[in-house]
Image (cartoon, rainbow, N blue to C red; front, side, top):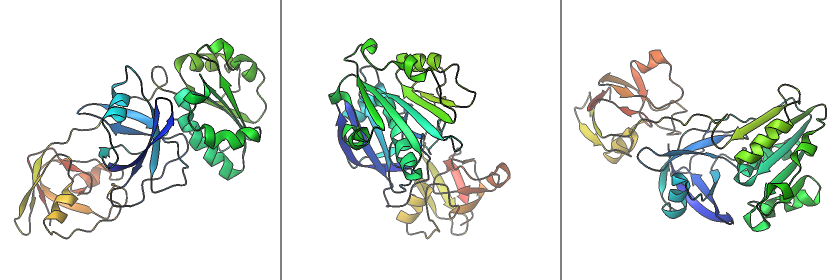
Length: 315
């Protein structure tokens, strides 16, 4: 789906926040705390970014991006993407969900690993669930969401740890995780060193009580694969009208531009309102709801495209 960058904000040194919305003001697909989306940043460049806003929100996604010297995706977002730009993103996926069974939640974040944890904090506050967060960074100026978390810190629910670049001066992860409390679940996300330390320190915790998400490497979800857009032609079987569908534009958008009435609602491939029969051509299905049998004859023209040069619709 294609979303618009509505705002870009400074969150901390080398960290920007990006707010993404539907260009037509529609609700976005729901997500749960811990979820992430893929963002397309070039012909074959996709990067996953955790959603940090409250999962109860339906009109926007918010991601936080650390500018990395060797990170092609992060450099493109920081240097090239501007407010008002349209970007292609995937549907939310969640490999890092909150447990519904836990009595208490211990959250551990390092650097930009705070992003999925922020959504968890919002959800746990709404549940009035018991939680505590240990947030590790180099220094206050490199601490995203510091102001948002200050009140929780004053309440004793959040503890900031600054190590000045030397982990030995920061949080004692071994001591923190030495004695797991019954009913407590652990969630951690951060740089490789912190992840290794937390994994080793929590190895003795009961099965099913430890949850983590890696930026990359072991345990990271494989990068989502998305077909490349290519132009094709669409023909309406009943009228014989034929239109070019360029890369980056949907069938729905092309038909609407030419005054062809079509039934739509979410235009994200979820509601099924634009379900259309096709009578010739090879459909490139990009929706998450149609089964294999249905795809042999029907497609959602708000998001799906064509693998063939010509696609004939029963319109």
